[in-house]
Length: 134
Image (cartoon, rainbow, N blue to C red):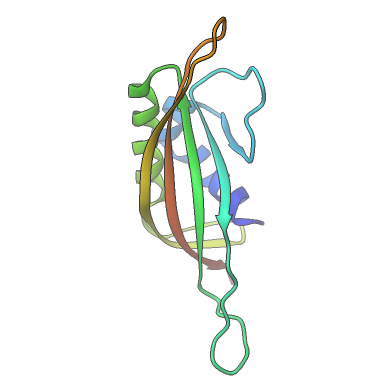
């Protein structure tokens, strides 16, 4: 199981996230026309560090961007706070063992096109410490 798949499953099973976004937690892209609010997970970096002696380090630090999208900035912000809370602390999801997540940045976004509904967002950048579960 990939980190983004495990993150999707972790967020989808978190009560606070599910109460806001339902099952609309996606990897890489949101299905066009799906209702809001929703969250979209992107892997920004996933380096594979090695340890002295040439082996791979089992604990990895990857950077995820999770875009929290809604019809108002308040709703997007609420979803981003639920996402941050859901990612804190250790948890095993499938073959991924999450150690901890640290917030690197949160920024607001919006998209307003004539004739289309406005979409507001809060993008959460997380450094996620994880390893493949034994």
